[in-house]
Each structure stands twice: as C-alpha cells, then as structure tokens.
Length: 303
Image 1: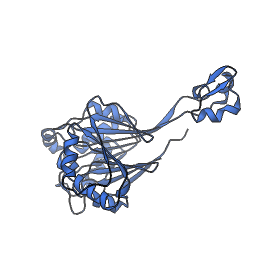
Image 2: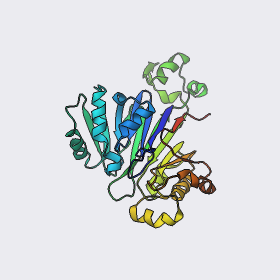
Image 3: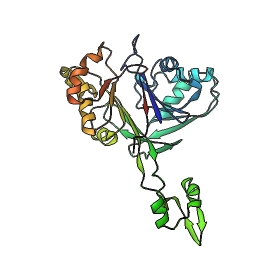
Image 4: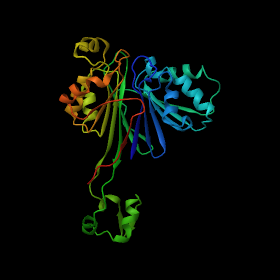
C-alpha cells in the first residue's frame, strides 16, 4: 500500500488557504516529499506528518515556489531532532541549491545525500519503491516522477511440479533463497507465475503537455498533474509560460487511461478551481480538483 497526500496546490505564491504545490508519498514507514516551496514545513505539520521522518526530497525544478522552503525545512527537521540521512534528488545544479539553503541554517544534525538527475537517469531503487524521473518541458530543467511498487507473481504449484521442485523448498525460494537439490540449483523463477501488476503513481508539474508524460502515466493508478489555468482563453498564457491548462491535463489523463487524475498547481488568480470540474468531466470523467490535505490510499488491484 502507498499513501499519497497533497501537501499544497498553489502555483507561484502561497495563499492564506492554499500552500505551494507539494506532495507526500509514504510507503513502509519511509516518507518521500516532492518539492519544498516556502512554508512547506507548515503544511506538513497540518497533515500530521513528522518532519523528523522525512527520508527523501524529490525536487522537480529550481523555481522558488518549489525549492524556496528548503532552508526552513532543514531548520524544522533539525529542531525536531532528525538524525538520519536525508536523500535529495533533483536536476543538475542540485548541490548548489542545497548548499545555499544549508548556509541559512545552523549546523544540521543529519547528513544529506545528493542525487543529480540527467535526462537518461535510470530508475532509482529506494526502499522497495522504483522511482523513475522523466524530463518535461519547462523554462528550466524540470522532471516529473513515476513511482512504482512492483508485485511478484504467485507461487504456482503446477509450475513447481513441472520443474520437479519439492513443496518443502517453496517457502525458501519465495524468500529469494537459493536451494541445492539433487545436484541442481533451484531458483525462485522455477515456481513463480509471471510478475503481476503493481502500483503506479505519477507526479508532474510546471510543464507543457509532452510525450514523456504520456509514456510515464500510461495506466497509472494515480496521476497528479498541474492545471495552472482553467479557462480555454488562457491557452496562450500556458504556451508562453510553459504551463498547462486543466483541459490539457484532463486530455493527457484520458489518453493514458489513468484510474484518477488530481489537478494541482493552480494560478493564484484562480479562486475557485472546482468551478471547472463539470466541464472537465466531459473530457475525462475520473478527474478531481486537488485541495490541500487531500489523500489517496493506493493498493494492489484484485486478481
């Protein structure tokens, strides 16, 4: 099970009732924070999240509404006595961004590991989750993130018998142990059915529609995507500023066949983003207008 919480939904600037766009992903006791704009630590406290237990920070890009809260986040983590390593992932230039934020804070009681992304960065294995960054189209280097929880196949008794694997070894093999039997080396693949569909979550913001998003979000269980502008008349602004309209986000979701798309990163001038919902549902019925504190629990589908 993966728990996804929307920390904030505002783009460009925080509002009294809307924190800057950010997301918290939780799996197996590990916490992954996507973006850290100004005041993100306040929004996290509202969610009831422990700042001491943030393990990863995934940064999409280095505009201030996505990284301007790093110094405050570091300070709050230190004040909450965090003493375990923090891993930060982001585009090229990450080390400069982190060092600049650290200079505003007194000595940190935890270490920071840096992982800088390039367009060909492979999937990162992070405590059971597979995190795949993918480049998107913005004014500066910007990445979305595909986060997946793989799922093994099931033990197949007929396959095990066909491969002459005694039942007494099935449990050990399912735990990835290598067993020697009758002069043979037995491995897990001799008794398991093919890999089953796992869980896929995709997050992207500050971008024009592009092929990399479509490829990443195909058949996702949850897709969180920016919807900076509501009116179709704002398309020219979206194109000029390399952002996306709500309709464009809904169209991507429909193309990808996602189970649900939640829109976020709303323009500060958009006071009531929910007023566009009915129209959006003509494009894609499973669209949701995001709000601060909204959560989703993602589980494996039924067989």
